[in-house]
Amino acid sequence: DVIGCHNIQLINAAVWSESDKTLKMATGRISVCQCITDDGEDVKTICLDDLDVGDVTFIKVDVEGCEYQLFTGAKKLIQKYSPVMYVELKDKCLRKYGSSKEKVMSLLSDYGYIVVDRIRDDYIYVHKDY
Image (cartoon, rainbow, N blue to C red; front, top):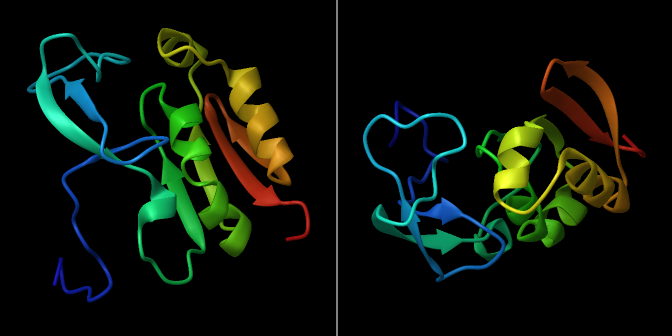
């Protein structure tokens, strides 16, 4: 059990577009957009589509610029469950990892999602059929 919940499983991995890749992750105190480094600790990746999960109704995403990678590895899960999503999109961080706010928003639009609210860099997405 994690804090009294029976449906939580902790996984020491970085969420990515594919599983079993190794990334160098910064350790200790890091600044914004500095998660992946050249000299960090080796961390295996996992994509959300490879997880055996039940009904997913909500996803909170704040991965410091790796949102595009996360969402490409979660396509099946998102299309199957159509969860509401709370997503942070900072263009500065996204560009560091080869993406952009427009690229992520276009991908989510392709998945059938629309923005229903925004607070600065945080977006709430729902499926258009919600």
